[in-house]
Length: 145
Image (cartoon, rainbow, N blue to C red; front, top):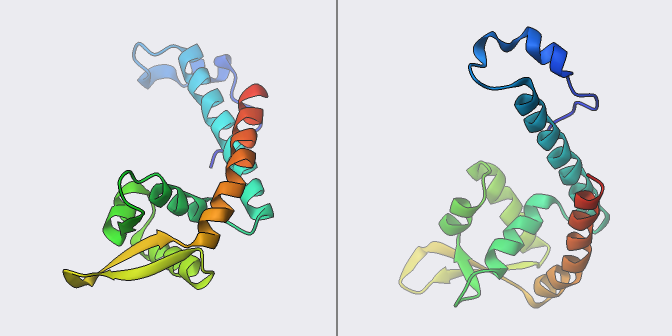
């Protein structure tokens, strides 16, 4: 997360520009501004999901399974490939989604060691109910910048 409310000025950046090469102060300021906007958007998204009893990570897991084309499930390793969190965090979060009956876990018929996960009916309904609000949060954040 990015926590600066007041960004450095171009003059301040200029004082530290020895290692910037051809990069201008305004380019650095532009990147810092983008980081702040992204941070503010993530905070808004976090608050939205928190109000609905979810975390952003739980939502992302539901999304990556839901968007899968041609099937309604993913293996643990496929979820891990699509979401950038540590495996212990992912494992705990998936377990929480199974415990809350948002996800169903089942085995692979050809390899009993492999776990597959799919949205339950209630998980799918919850996700469907959240999408419009999620898009609205994103659009509001975009418009406010």
